Figure: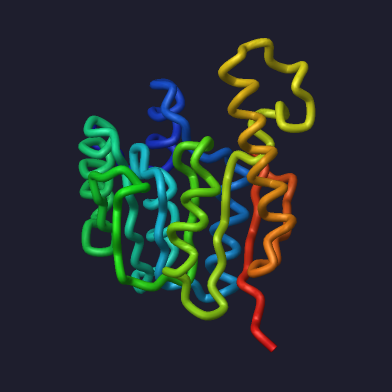
Amino acid sequence: MNMNSIDQLKNNARNNHVPIMQDGGIKFIKEYIKDNNIKTILELGTAVGYSAINFASIDKDIFVLTVERDQDRYNEAIKNIKDFNLDKQIRVELKDALEFETDLKFDLIFIDAAKSQYIKFFERYKHNLNDGGVIITDNLSFHGMVDDLSLTHNRNTKQLVGKIRKYIEFLKENDEFETTFYQIGDGVSVSRKKKLD
């Protein structure tokens, strides 16, 4: 099936229960990319390429390096990216984001992979930020459960919510970065490295 529109890609992902960004979140990041002249993006968690395609579609000068550990999703992402003729702008790596290594520097690092590993991802990749760059994280509200744990009675989900809460505290207390939280989409944070005096 050829994906010739972003909406088609979005609907197909949702129908197949692939976790992709909510509309509000993707719109927010696209605006951020435009307003801040972002040209290089590292994305942790490709899924089927939905957000990478959205980001690269903004401007032909934007390069996205995206990391995915699931073989099937990786294959799907490669196909979708080709369908949108963005394979020159988007590079997909089949690798666990906790094992992937790169010396490249990025204007924006987008964390949207395993929620239980958010702190590890942040610490692992913060050195890959350009001066003035930001780390943006999605799913910090996790369908409202982070604020209201009564929305779930599943033990695994409760543990995951606990880890997201821990990550939020980690961001709030982080001396190196200044983080702003937005109640947009499924909860988004923007962490900017503080300038040294």
